[in-house]
Image (tube, rainbow over all chains, first blue to last red; front, side, top):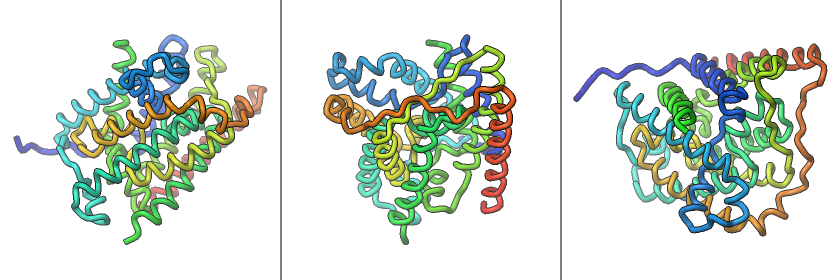
Length: 166
Length: 169
């Protein structure tokens, strides 16, 4: 099964394609909304936890469902392209984490759970994430998304500085 | 539904092929050792800002601006930024990385769904702490010419910044 890996897509092309995709999705005849991802999490969670009739679950039903289908596609797309390119790999502790934090799987699992909780709870408080606020908000010169973007980048870099201190 | 899934497949494949979805890239950015994440984001925003402006002016799309809810955007941004640095993924890349076999991303997805359920449960009491809502503010002049100028300057600035960051990689 050992086959040659296909090299990564250049960052500039990835940016151009991602920008084009967002503009296509925004088209009134395509999806008439921008790319977004974080609403899928509370919607899936709300349904699974029996909160189908909760205020919030009802409020986000439409974008929540759209984003669940979109992320299902993203999962399939990533699986297929990683298989074709030869970089599909079952791995619990990422290389860069290992280099700074060591190879303990439990440590990585614990911080993964804490990080994911902060990430999704924060995204829902703000009403968007990297996709919905930063990619899609900045392209519309949205003030709210720009405030979010600045706060995120500052906290991200400061947390990184403190957390990955070696 | 099929249409949305196909759009998602393209999204997932672009991110996966650029490797920007991985912990090594996102965590690497938190360590200020890798700038692939901001470079791709800057180019994507520059391209989509220009094209979307044209698309809207041609009547083929409308803007969908989120409101500036001060407490939510700032408080949420702080939690989100800290979480993303520790986790090394954002909501979309959690799913993309799960697709290419990252087991930590799968665990993060499950934890994220649980966090989402908790938010849905707490929403009635959290809601009042998110305000004030300043409405949907767009930093874009109404006139076509002034709008086009702002969009062009914004895009050039982002591309310049991406190229600047590239010299650090």
